[in-house]
Image (cartoon, rainbow, N blue to C red; front, top):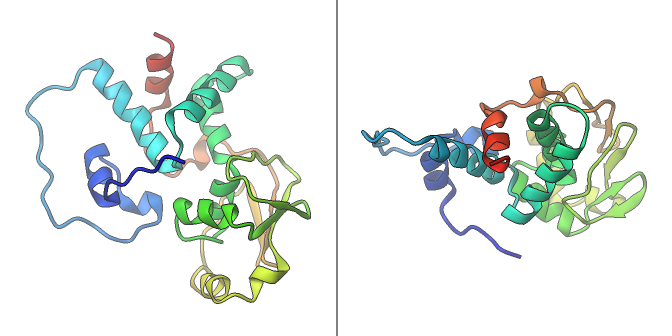
Length: 197
């Protein structure tokens, strides 16, 4: 599996996003250098695509497959693309507060700490649908990691399309995510324009 080894804060600074979007409560002490050169239309589109790929921790090939799927479906392509990315299992685990970052959520899913509708789920790219129940495995609940996360995320915000059951360390998908549920600044129409050339 390919990994981006570039420091997260450096990448956030280059893409112009806040590390808080990734769940990281750090900030760079360096002042960002503003380029005097005007960015081309292609440069803006590419930067937007790279930003979304970095936030959701998705490589180029799977990201392009999500775009192809979004283009074939009904609805606005850009919004459907973001909806597909939000429905990934690793993102849902992060949104429910079972991990402090999406990268950590991906690792926890890979290690088999979660079940989807009572069945072990260890593929981060699985897409959830309304009615699905995501739960921490019984064996994993007693681990120090999940107990610390439970205390840390006791008052964490859960989007309205998800429902969290803190007592049972589980969550339920109650609806499909909407465009208003995306909590970071993204111009998805630029990604659509880039791929439709």
